[in-house]
Length: 185
Length: 323
Image (cartoon, rainbow over all chains, first blue to last red; front, side, top):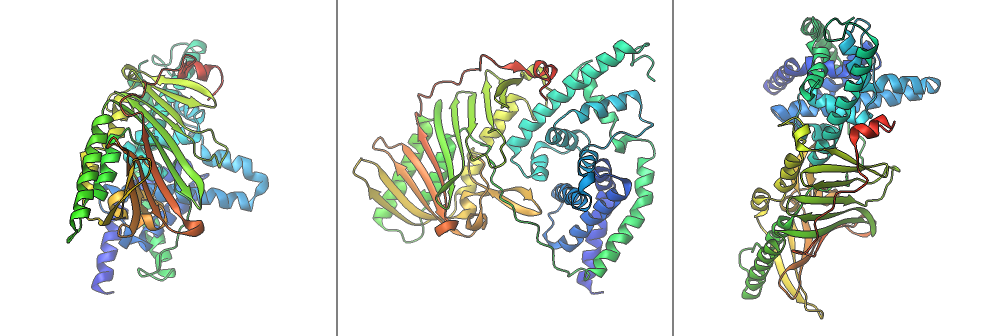
């Protein structure tokens, strides 16, 4: 291995160590299954390896990885559709919005329910902001839109989420006693 | 429940916040890393060529700019003299600078800008921006290739309105939005102005060649020259792993315009009153020809946008079943 190759490997390893958990989590929530998530995360880092010389440094690298993950997942869904046309609808729905884990708390289940009622793009910008902690400008880079557009979508997504979640919570509180906050399931 | 509680619940639902996630990720990391390295070696090792992502059209219809400064910025590109310019060119430089200053002054309070991009002689994208003080109206009228309704947006008295499926939705007042979320109307407007502020102008101040002057019969004067694409369309983030460059008002630059050093033909049309009427940039030829134009009108007397009377609060719309 040459010095250049060693330097390249060090850079990749540092990139992987810094971001693998984030990318795995991102893929895990959006892929149709755990194995699909692993495949997607591996593909993301393989692309990163191949294009390491083009990768930006610092936070921009993280944004680049999210953008790549988003594209890899979209490709994965398209492949899935080609492979099983009959399964298309189900696969799309599952890939677009995986359900929460069976052991989720009531609050978490309501969050998932509320997220499921958002438009896919609204949901994506909201989760990039709230779960991945990206700024509007970073979300724009991931989504391939302008920062202005990302801000608009984020604004709308926040409002929608809040409204839907509160309605769900109110309905749940009405039908369940004691109230959610006091007792939970 | 207030806004913060809703979002606290959302944040608690983050899979990464779940007990054991860090340990699981750490356990998976070694296998994932080994898998990637093995695949990289199979693919030809570190020097393997990158796969080219599918090239897609990048233009977005959304507008970014209230602005007088776009005129000033673009004009400044053209106003820059190259070494060895003669007296005529120097006069043209002064004239364009004066026109930019006059335009900025005229547009300070209000104005209308119509932004258009054509490709191969056909409309590719377009937006009309009207501003009056802190109120802004954006209307995108680019071709609806995917059958989606065009984006329209209003900010009136600090309230953001969005047109969705033909209905106006009141997206909220500043008081109802998380501060520092980047999504309040004030923050929205700040972002609009950022792209056309002094920083943008300064970034563009570098190099211009071949400035000429042409007087037309209607009293207007066209100043023409060549500007490096990188001075006109600045870099703005990444898409599909590639840096993208964006013109004032938010349009992604294509083909030659995406290459910073590429020379683009540019014209600034100045009216008899000394105010800029239009800025046009061209590149490519034949079916690959692009034009980017910004036409200014009603500078100083564009009426303030009016809040739509039939706007419904977002919550009400959601309850009515329209998501």
